[in-house]
Length: 297
Ligand code: ATP
Image 1 (spheres, protein in one colour):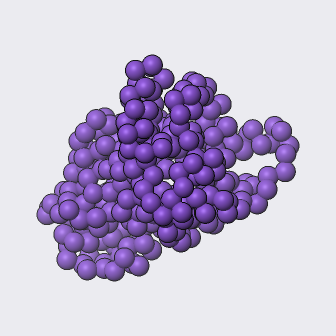
Image 2: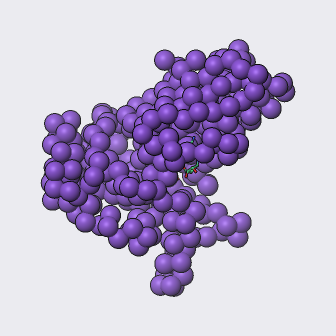
């Protein structure tokens, strides 16, 4: 069984005040883009994982691997002991703010559901996914969707067209927890009142009509200041994208990947080339969205 599963970018990430339980209420608009991991599941006695591809040396292959955790959670849900050899072909940057681990968890759920002949409906997989992590349910469905609460209450959003993106990949990842901690630290230092997160209506309209210009000017990420504080070298990368005509430039999720919205596919290709040619990014990848979530191929 082979499942292809996409990366995501957050076109709006609004982070509410720190809650007493240590989490934040979010308004999180996810958008799935055409950078994919593949998860292959083969029959086996036990559950194992192997990771191939350019980022493989940064991914754990022990029980902390999110694909293993997903397969175990699925077997537990089914109430039986199952085995699977999972092989992940990794193309999504690791700890890059593009939900690569969540993608692999979603891929493992779909692949093992098929391999083990469980035939569980998407509703059941979504429930198991929600327990694995707040980005995992979105990786299952893909497209464009808004997550509220801790990000786990999801509603799909219709979009009026395809958007073209460039992603500048950084050397080395950023831990999501450390970026949230830096965001809290910066907010505490300024003492500013943190507003309750609200969905941006202009962004919704831009997504619905497929207006890339309007989407570009409405991209927002409350974690960006924290990610830039931890990685100051990202600021010139964002500036370079704007100078090369990006309609919007933003840190993707908790970073350090930077996302640039292009006018069309040709502009995306040119922008990717300019970013690498000028040294503003060592790797830049053109992609489009929205794309479907985890799918058997
Ligand atoms: P998000 O955008 O959801 O905050 P991210 O893209 O920044 O996440 P991931 O690539 O999902 O980060 O990985 C975060 C950490 O999870 C990695 O540093 C790695 O140690 C661990 N991890 C566990 N399983 C996986 C996996 N299958 N793929 C990638 N990372 C994994």
